[in-house]
Each structure stands twice: as C-alpha cells, then as structure tokens.
Amino acid sequence: MKMPGQDESIATVPAVTRRRKRPDTVADQIRERIIENGLVPGDRLPHQWIEPETWHVSRGTLREALKVLESQGLTHSKTGPGGGVFVSSIESEHAIRLLDNLFLQRQPSIADIYSIRKELEPVLAASLAGKLTPAALSLLQATVRLYEDEPTTTEEEYRQRMAELDFHDELARLSQNQLLGFLCRFLVSLLRDTAVCRDIYQQHNPALRETGLHYQVALLRAIKAGDADRACAVMRNHMIAAEAYMLERAEIRRRREPNLGAV
Image 1: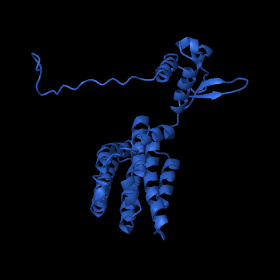
Image 2: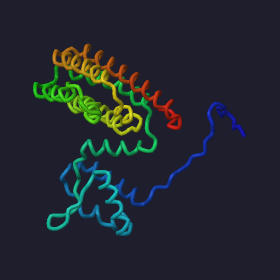
Image 3: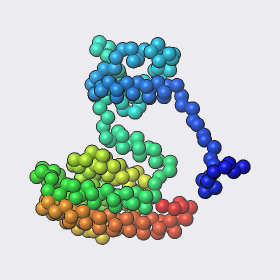
Image 4: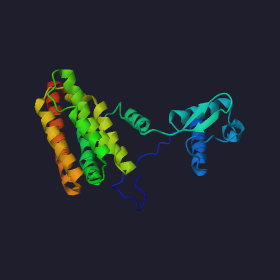
C-alpha cells in the first residue's frame, strides 16, 4: 500500500541487517581504542585491552578477536619475555592483496578498471613532472630497459608485459599523494590478477611493446622536463590506447569462447 507522501519512484526494499559475530565487534572496539589513544607501530596494547573481562566475553572469543586484528595486519603477537600484542605497520602490498582478494570471485571488467585509470594516471603523471630525483628517473628508465629488446620466447614476451605494468607501479610508488599512488597501484594489481587480462597479456603481439615504449619514453621526457600538461596528455593517450587494445582483444576472446561472458 502506498503511504501518504511516498515517492512512487523509490522502490521499498526491506532492510537486511547482518548480525556481526562477537569476535568481530570486540576487534572493532580494540581498533577504536588504538585510534583514540594514538598508538603507532611498535606500541604494545595495554594489558587490560587483551583481557576477556574488559569486554565481558570468553577467553576464546577474545582470542578470535585478536586473530581478526592480526589477519587485518593491524597487530601482531610476541611470546616470551617482553611479549604481548603490538601494533603493526601495515604494508601497502598487504592492503592491496586484501583488496584483490575481494574481487577474485566477481572480477571487475576491463572497462571498469580503465574508466578509473584514465582519470587517475594522467593526474599522477602530471603531479610527478619536475618532481623526480635523478635516482627515481634512473629507476624508471631501468624498468623500461627490461622490455627494450625484442623478446625471443613467449615467456619473455609475457615478462616484458609484466615489466610494463611494473613501470606504472613504480610511478605510483613515487607519488607524494599517498592515496593517489595507492589507488593507481591497486588498479595495476587488478590488471595482473584479472583472468581475461592475463590471457590477453600472454597473446603474441610485437607491436604492443613498441607502442608501450613510445608512450613511456615520451612520458619520461615530459616528467624530466617538468612539463605537467604534456605528461598528463601523454598518459591520457596511453590509457585510451591501452583500453582500446584490451577491449578489442577481450571481444575477440569472448567470440572465440562465448561461455566466458562479458568483460
């Protein structure tokens, strides 16, 4: 029945509340205390925080809560003298792997990934223009040299494709904007793990390496010269070309194997 004043354009969906397990809620409470008290990596959690009486739970429930925090990379335990539960330093690689796992069962499409890459990577490139040290530029140039030569085997060609992704990963690591760098690295990681992308990267295509080299050499020149507009434009064109290639190959793959579905 339509209630007075109810907007017919809004569908009424029954709320589904998922009840969380007690160890998860205790883990959340401990996490909140870590934040509120400003604990940093290496700090030991106060003894009362890891006592079941503090949270009015069983010792088993608390043990499970601590396992939750450890699986999230937030804490680690030490035994023996000087032992206890300590705040951990969460590495970005660990966080990216956790996010990758989130998408293992329902992998994003190539179009989804590139719709974001086309927005973020040009901004990343522009932000690095004129900002990189000679050592950082040398690192990027060394990555490019890994795929300068013609591959002699299919395996070497695949490794070169991975090295091209490494180039983008290294660019993101150099970003002064930690969030921007992390997001760009995560998108590169998704490309490595997505099944359709892996299949495309393993396909023989000599022209692809030349195209990648063209863009990346031009990009390094723009970054070294401090030309942010040029760096942005080069990266945007690179992302557009890469997306078009990946979508074309994915469509060919779908027609060859129609049961694979949309990409």
